[in-house]
Image 1 (cartoon, one colour):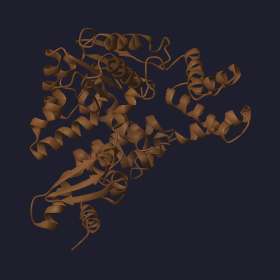
Image 2 (cartoon, rainbow, N blue to C red; image 1 turned 30 degrees about the vertical axis):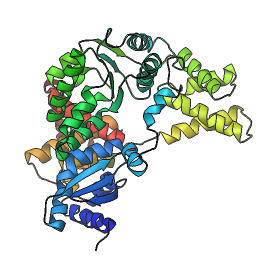
Image 3 (cartoon, rainbow, N blue to C red; image 1 turned 45 degrees about the vertical axis):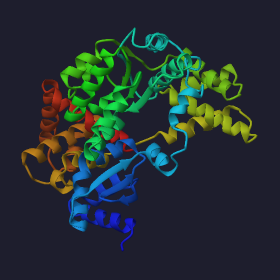
Image 4 (cartoon, helix red, strand yellow; image 1 turned 180 degrees about the vertical axis):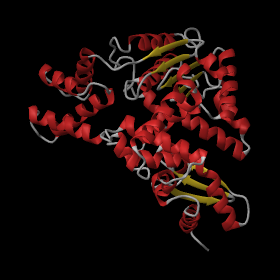
Length: 436
């Protein structure tokens, strides 16, 4: 009898018949097999981005491999970290308890000009859920405090009403839950879970854009909650009008309540964040140190807080907190977030997205799909790296300056006139940035 690990190894061998080794390493390096139960293979992938892509793009390949092995139809279930923990220890406390921990509250959220509207709206929602700003749509770049505000709303409502049914979920997890409910025939359980909540918090709702059936299900879930005067709070990396693949019905509903953006914090707010985080950790930082950190790290609250954590670790080890120590903490944080985008990174991701091989995109083929992928790769290399047009052309079979320029220009022109095409390019850029 073959072990479940042997079966997964056989599946990967079959995937290599259709996918390149680079694709296998890129998308399955963090995936492990958990169990084979009946006609279901259970896998675990801790990376939300990769998990979603496996679910969307590679599940048919895996199921086809299972059918080859077992000569019968099989299904695949992908678990995130929380689902795996619950499977291994059903009594373990869920991470949602973080909302009750007191770490992410309105009291610990540093307010400044960049987030004042979003914070005020979140407080109003927590004070009177379902009565003001429903839905509340908070948008902005990663690391600026959107999730903190979601937790703060949940914490505030829980303090006033311990019996409130609060549901927090990420956009990609909603997709996975919905797909699994369809596969397992448990649509009723899925709808009960989502439509009976008193407060639904959805982080990174942008992931549902372009998923037709998922958007339809979310539309009906939204309507049910809204008509029952239940509070809905959504976060995204962009406003609804910039989601070209978002269903118009959802776009309209997302704009019904209040849309509030969070921007990069100004210097004074960054200093306050540093000092506030240090105080919460029992660490006293001088004004000079706090200002130095705030001047060096300007765009991301998580990096500011991470730097303070690093300094606290040095302090606990008995290392003096001087200029050199602070500089080291900052450099460690910057290095941990560094990701140098190369032309090869871009070409690999474009090939993965369009499911073509690198030798095809670099070669002479002028089929519509290959040509489109090649031109987008040229455009992204020019916009995301410092490579010249001549050097860019050399990556694609030695194409000359004018040919490369023509490809880049076509992409730029089409992005201006075709929202769906522009959204495709944006999705590839997001994928490239997410591979770090």
